[in-house]
Image (cartoon, rainbow, N blue to C red; front, side, top):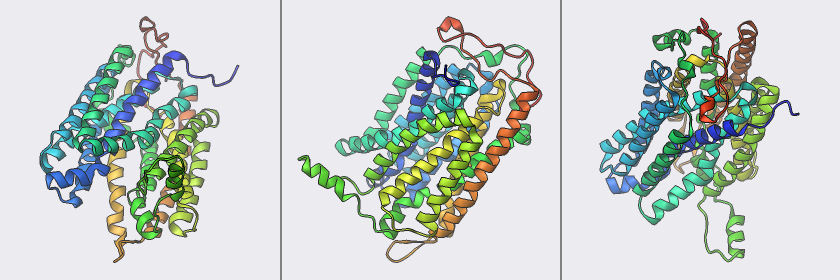
Amino acid sequence: MSKHPELPASERLVVLLIAAVHFINILDFMIVMPLGPDFALELGIATHHIGLIAGSYTAAAAVSGVAGSFFLDRFDRRKALAVSMFGLVVGTALAGLSWNLPTLIGARVVAGLFGGPATAISLAIVADVVPRERRGRAMGTVMSAFSLASIAGVPISLEIAHAADWRAPFYSVAALGALISAGAIFLLPPLRLHLKEGITPPGWGMFKMLTRPLPLLSALALMAMVTSAFAVIPNIPSYLVFNLHYEGEGWIADLLAWLGIDYRPSVLGPLYLIGGTVSLLVIQLVGRMTDRFGSAAVSWVGGALTCTIMYIWFINYQPLPAMLLFVFFMGAMTVRGVPARTLDTKVPMAHERAAFMSMQSAVQHTTLAIAASLSSFILSENRDKSLEGMPTLGIIAVVFAILLPTFITLAELGVRRRDAKQPDSHAIKPPAAAGMGTTAPVPARAPASPE
């Protein structure tokens, strides 16, 4: 028998539902920027305010992440997820009803306030249900939602907007989110074993949590991962078009013409389609490798790949095909993401998982906003719209890419030492009455600290 068996049917159902929740959450965030020119024109919004609209979601998610860390572990996870998804769906639908800049920003704030906790609760559910020896592949499945959003979600949303108007994608995502939310409510069993008598959620103790070694290392690792990626990601389209004079993949148009299809794809669309497809395949392998070799080993591979692509694409540009460079970049990001988020599920104890994940959500969204704004201080625009300063951003990304596996290695060693001293039931099985497995034993008292 394999040392790491496939996910049982009960776990697989939970993981697929959580992956669907993540898909909606990610797609809700991703469609705003490509739809920007359309709603800016109709609502009379200046184009430089599009970033403000996208940033309002991130800021709200960061605030709700901090707030949610104080109380999310006090509720049945299924009910908490239902409330969060309801708020996210309402906020998404309100965006389609907006009539000016303030109402659109308000709608995105509502979506962010509920979208941040939805992510935290989802990851807590995965950690509750899936034992650690299978958690890498479970997280790989959940994180594949990003690839699916890039491959199908965004292109389909743009086609819907083209056929109708910019409001239609928001309504469509809201409707799909309502269906997935209903599925999660009716298919998930009650998840409240973390509320057993004698176990107290951290509450205000969350502030103390960030001063302890393991949670602090996890936060630093997440900050390093986000910074190394989003220092360059917002500028890649402009860099490709104006610095590298990328004009698209002509062979795709030729292939379509040979098939009798008179259609020329957008310049960047095929990059995201193929890059997302490759990352979707890579993410499944990375999940299995994380289960087998551990988060630290796999994250060092991801770090090496990230440093390589940053050097040959931004620091000392090598004239390789843009498609190859873009796919390499997305693959490297994927190899880093799965081990980092898998380790996140092993750091907190069962009674504080949602709180910890909520705090991590706040760290992620805050760092994302700071990292994305780096370019405004470092880059300058030439007369031909090309960007000056990309090598500097590349060097910054390399530094943080090396820090990421360093923090993960230290955190993983700490988790192993802690678990050797005080074993914890890290996987909480849903009740057998729900047809989802047996109940794992829960300690009568919460451990003093998750270190």
